Length: 83
Image 1 (spheres, one colour):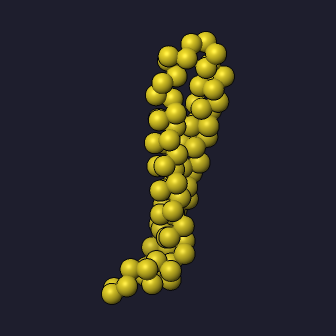
Image 2 (cartoon, rainbow, N blue to C red):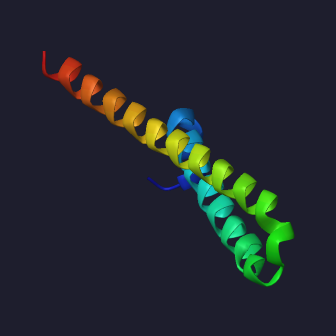
């Protein structure tokens, strides 16, 4: 494996999954930075906090679904290789 970019270019699903994980981690960090000072804003920040938690919950569900789908894909591929 002399050229890592060529390796990832040949495997677009793997590259896409890596990009998805990086995007989710960036979203987690940005959500944490956004909500870090919400306690100082008082009651007016409640809608923003609830929207942030709803978005975070959706992000976690979609991330878990992506990992489960990836696991299913890898397991089914391994089973097909054995037979």
